[in-house]
Length: 89
Image (cartoon, rainbow, N blue to C red; front, side, top):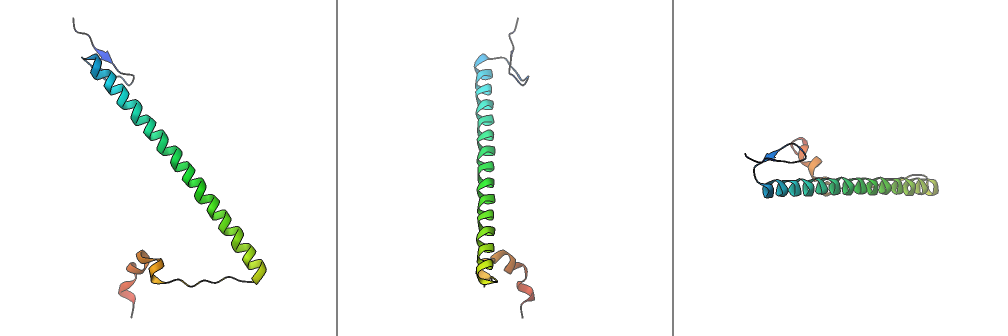
């Protein structure tokens, strides 16, 4: 009689070591996935906080000085510049 080892997700193995190795690999992949999701959420929150801070600073500047203007160059937006390079005269 042959013994089969079944992992939590239903995959079957004939060797116990292979089954354990597979389960450990799955657990590690799941932990990495969870870690990446947590890092992504933390970075998203960081971006939102930076945006809120920018808006607050901009509103204070406009309240103090009446308006805000800035000058940008092509170096600030190389991708957009490359899209319209054929239209430059």
